[in-house]
Amino acid sequence: MPPSPSQRNATLSDWLRQNQSSPNWTFWGAHASASLNMLAVGSVFAGRIAELAGRSVLLATADQLTAALALIELDGVARRLTLCAPDVAPEHLPAVVADAEVDAIVSDRAAPEHERLGVDLRAICSPEIQPTETQPSRPYRTEWILLTSGTTGAPKAVMHSLASLTAAIKTRGIGEPAIIWATFYDIRRYGGLQIFLRAVLGGAPLVLSDSKEPVGQFLARLAAHGVTHITGTPSHWRRALWSPAAGSITPRYVRMSGEVADQAIIDNLRAVYPHAKIGHAYASTEAGVGFHVDDEREGFPANFLRETRDGVEIKIEGGSLCVRSPGAAARYLGKGHGAIAADDGFVNTGDVIIMRGERCFFGGRAGGVINVGGSKVHPEEVEAVINRHPDVRLSLVRPKKNPITGSVVIAEVVLADSLAGNGTDARKSEVKGEILALCRENLTQFKVPVAISFVPSLAMTNSGKLARHA
Image (cartoon, rainbow, N blue to C red; front, side, top):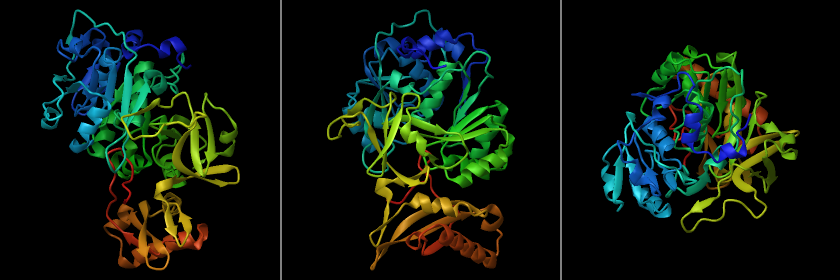
């Protein structure tokens, strides 16, 4: 059942006390673990948390476990919390500090880039919980600031409350099977934060990822802890399925978000995890959680556009998905940014929707469209077709300049192991022809790649998405 309105106004420490009796309530990081039951009577700040009362805090730890524990302690103590993932470029930190009016930095290390930010109060925390006799008062409705993961320029600072961040979360009912959560995401990004909050509100254990950890090692940790519920981007899951350790886990629940989930990845997950509930969800930092799809098909039913689901409404305007949700962010911080929502409360996500009958399909970002002689090509639509080929692991479609049409479509393809290292040139040539035939059967001519190149790998962003060329 969803938390009540009064519970929505509780701090994370209140939820900690409420779930104190949860057995084995442990958060596991890559290098350490912590019992949240101990955090109810302890602290990771070594007596310094009182200094952070009423402050605008930049949380900039290298370690996710430390960040998780600090978030629980600081909610209600700090007036504002800005979550800073390690991949935020040092040159962007001054803008983040200015936009969020940061007057204190919390980290798990002495970082030279922090010393140059002009913030006098710097506190060090660690994942080691020390007993404490007194708990600080928590008089604040802490503002939670998330940074967008844009690929160019300084990230935008997006203001949420704990109520908006937990609007889509339903706590586990009495008698339901126990859950052990895990996520490929960083909890300082919106997708990962949702799983962190689900674990705290539900009194459930959580296994945290590490960006430097090989995927096989992470999967081995998931297996060792008996993880039941796992989330990540489609790109995260493709990497997981390539790993020999993919079969070592037996999840009950697999969910994707953050990128377009095409039919190939859905079908591949079903083949490897036959007993799992497999779905994909739509969410964004600004709009919050929009909806989830559990029918094991790409896209979503058109009737979602005609229904209010869990208090969320969606519509298509100018070809883009718009969401009105109790989980939407309040506003951007800093100057030079427009309003998040329109006057009617809808947030234009910039994600293109393509209607085919009674099904809606994601076409990627509005800014990522390839213009071929005046006709629009959505890269994700072409990739979804290429990825259907059984010998394709992953593909990336991008434009190439052309003097006649302005641009043409080309594709980079990662082949399955059986072909990538040992396949003959003749077989690779056959596969290329089969991919082109598949595209011609399912796409209009201007969308068919004029060239396909086989590459050993494709880059991913730190947020787990396929890195697209600017």
